Image 1 (cartoon, rainbow, N blue to C red):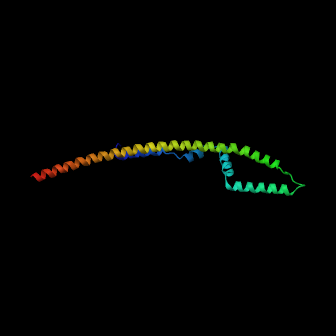
Image 2: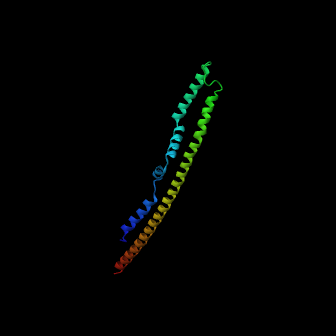
Image 3: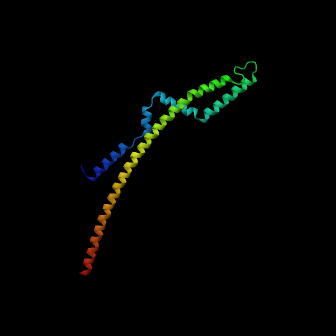
Length: 155
């Protein structure tokens, strides 16, 4: 089986083995902690989280400002600052883990794109060579037809 169809099947196999679904590969290899880090980073970096947290902080300040006698965290809201600092201390590394994983994924995607580009360039060069060979053969046919036409006119 060394015909042109077999060569095309072989090229398709090479191309399909070259292209990888990076998202699927990464998703399959993620641990529970990595999935949780991505969920936390996605949640903390969303508008609903920012809006809910802003509302909670405003309520916190109003309740503790109005309730002079029973305020659990009076001005300057040290407990609120402690909670926000703790939240920032935990979410920052989690967000960094998620960003590092995304950077790794981006590097793999870029390498995969590079491999696909190289394969595409090779296939294009092969097509160009084929077209040039066809042009050469067509020129031979045209030259042969011109000679035949010239021979017919001289007779």
